Length: 128
Image 1: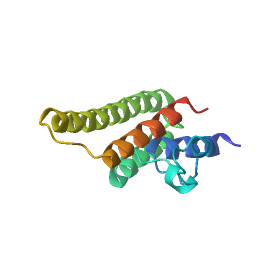
Image 2 (image 1 turned 180 degrees about the horizontal axis):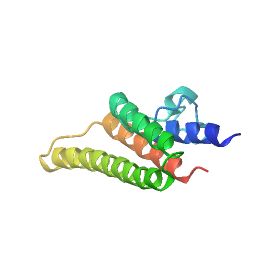
Image 3 (image 1 turned 60 degrees about the vertical axis):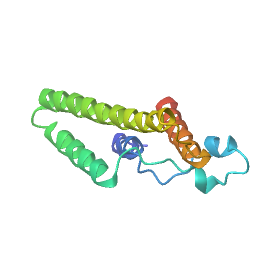
Image 4 (image 1 turned 180 degrees about the vertical axis):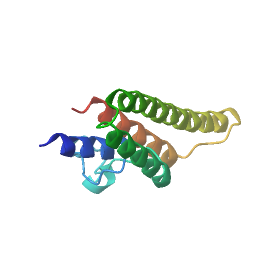
């Protein structure tokens, strides 16, 4: 696999838009989950993911002319993506806590979907 292919794959995986099914996750499925239900959940809305990808492409294109600046921009972009991701998970947690604190019952389905998103993200963090 070439560097460009690896980069394309990691960018797609990081943005959460991969169409592949993680066989290890399918093997760990709970209560008869099908392989299709184990697809990686998007970490960002499609428009935000596309914006990040577009900016990443610009960073890569700039490497030839200004390698140091491209690396600095890459660092900045990754920091922004991680900050956005952390904010997204924090917001989900706050919403659940707000429901729990107000005495509302959070449906098992909502909790299952949340746990699947955490599992998907966790698996991606630990993948090679």
